[in-house]
Amino acid sequence: DDNSLLYKILGKKRIMVNSRHNDHITYTKASRVAYSKDYIIEAIEVLNHKFMLGVQWHPESLYFDNNSIKLFDYFINIL
Image (cartoon, rainbow, N blue to C red; front, side, top):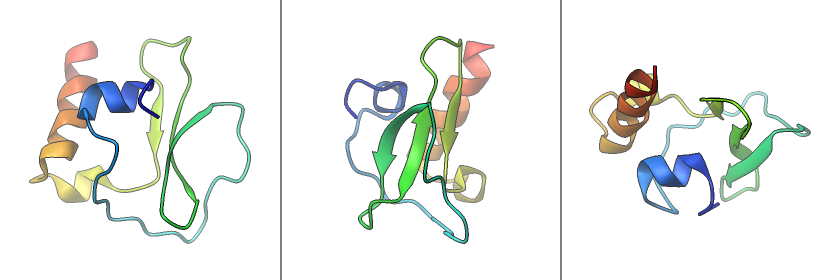
């Protein structure tokens, strides 16, 4: 979703992730802002909070990846 915080942070509509889908969100009141090719929800946000962004992949395992670095930098700097 190009109106999302995730898009604001990454500046991209498509990225490579390391999804490990054993379980996944099927319903949420949060905004669904990213999906995988198989239509699994990959990211959610709650807009009326300072920072509430959840991702289905593991950016901590991709510490060398520029997109993961952007996520962590944003999180650290928002505090």
